[in-house]
Length: 175
Image (cartoon, rainbow, N blue to C red):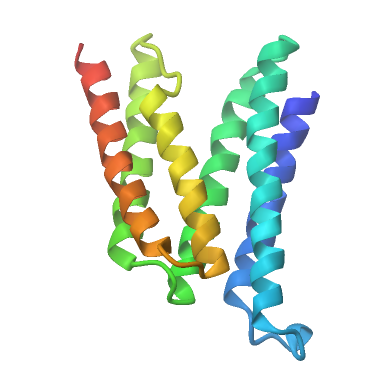
């Protein structure tokens, strides 16, 4: 296990912790804690996990530590983090279920498409639109976790870019 793979593993471990903090707010463990503090702590976990996403990729490329295991762990960690955040936010009523359905449907579809592309020897690297999509989703998640103004608008902007990036991948596959 190299450092990038350890960072991806940490992200995998943080995803269920973040989900638990979002959906189990009535737990006796949290009694007496103001819900806004749970928002802050959940957002902090999400930000820390998101930062590991940047660094594991940066370190893997910079230190030439790209591995097959990392090729599995990194996208899995990304999907678990987004899945936990979006489903948790939907459960507590902060995220529109249709927006979440669209985003998660795209994630499953494109993951499958990338497997097909890899099997055909085509490039499966994240496109620029895919990277922008991820950043916008992460910003929207942060706003939703903090219950900030314009969070819904940011979520729908992320949905639009998410759909655009799906078409970008499909176009790349068909070329």
